Image 1 (tube, rainbow, N blue to C red):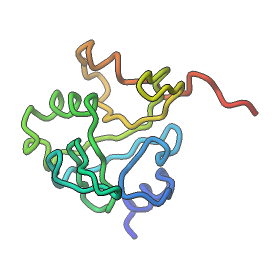
Image 2 (cartoon, rainbow, N blue to C red):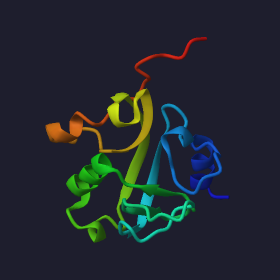
Image 3 (tube, one colour):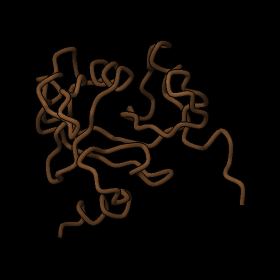
Image 4 (cartoon, rainbow, N blue to C red):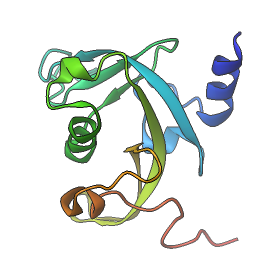
Length: 142
């Protein structure tokens, strides 16, 4: 096992899924993954026999993949270019972030994954307001 694989195993919880999720990444963890391919929307079948409507990132050196929501799609376009083929070969930092409230999920303090831009990157306001924060809004009771 390489040092990169050991680092990834320390930061990602085994939750039995193929796709990275907010619950799968440990609090405060950020992982760097090199993008190997981008699967277009509606080309991969989910376990419930429905097509996955989002693009999917495939990474080198791991079997984990990541579905791309609107915010991460905007971030990838902003960082690497508007065409998904431009993303291939770039290294993306993925981190766990908390959203104060997600109305469509009727959820508070919702864990999600975000592509984390390099420090000092000036992001447009429409992306910034959807980034979330590193710590929980409502700390867990001890």
